[in-house]
Amino acid sequence: METTQATGEGLTFEKVWAAIQESNRRMEETDRLIKETSQQMKETDRRMEAADEKLREQMKETDRRVGAITNRFGEMVEYMIIPNLVAKFEELGFTFTRANRTEIKDRKHNLFLEVDALLENGDKVMAVEIKTKPNSDDINGHIERMGKLRTYADLHDDRRVYLGAVAGVVFSESEKIAALKKGLYVIEPSGDTFAITEPKGSYHPREW
Image 1 (cartoon, rainbow, N blue to C red):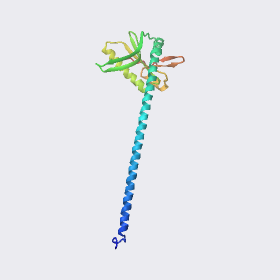
Image 2 (image 1 turned 90 degrees about the vertical axis):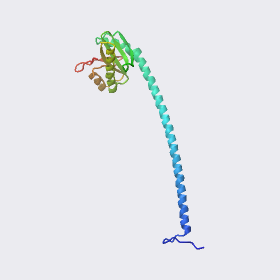
Image 3 (image 1 turned 180 degrees about the vertical axis):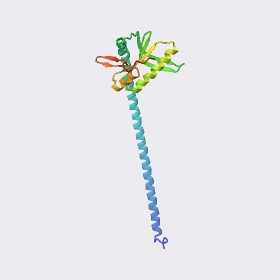
């Protein structure tokens, strides 16, 4: 039986057929590699999802522990720092008769806030924000809180003068100066107790 030659190229039918079969084999191999790669990518995605889930669980655990530390710090503030604040402010000429943590929930006027320590008498109120390491956001946040306190006081015919203070376990010099510039008292550790710095000189206590 004679074979038919491809025009101009001297290729036999057998060679062409073999080339087609080889092409098919390579395509099948390519398909196999694509499927393997796809499977590997799916496995990689599965492992990444598992890693993400583990990371989320670790973050939840970290948040839980931080929350527990924060709660303990809050308890320390309530039972140790607040009672001593009254005595310390007396050294600056204040005579506060009440001191406690305060939470305001006024849905009617959309006023919601918490004050770590609210020191009061018949004329003045000192609102103290207490942080482990105060930063600029904490300071600005307390300024905003003071404005809300003034609004709440006005709504209840409270004409007393409101003052603000920020207390910190670790207080950087720059944040301390920033707080004083905004008219806030600064409370920080000093030896076995703590000291209160009053805005004075070029700074003045801000009243609300």
